[in-house]
Length: 121
Image (cartoon, rainbow, N blue to C red; front, side):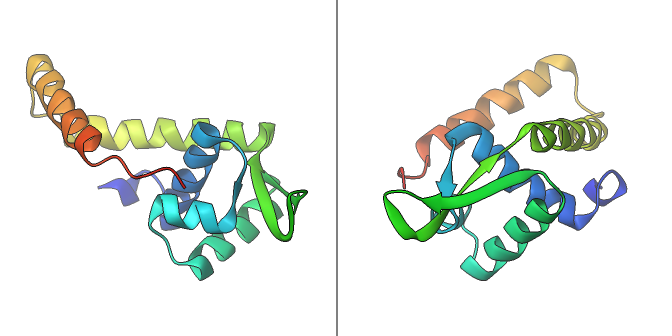
């Protein structure tokens, strides 16, 4: 269902951009750990996002062997567009539920996520 609203690359872009928006500057390794992605996958996503002008990558002043990745204004706009498409997919998925059922599902999912929140990187 999600594929109708956004290509596969947009889904991985969304994960990386949302993590950068939430946590701020992160190394590629930290991004991978937070998202549960392989370092090669993160490298490819970051390279694609940088080529598209959606992120900035700079040398970490505390450790010159690693890069810090940050979302920029173009990336924020791209993230907003992806979010709109994700919201459309979610609305279609949940269309069979009443408003109270949607709220209940949201509360239950939030409870599950809170119980399994990943450790800070």
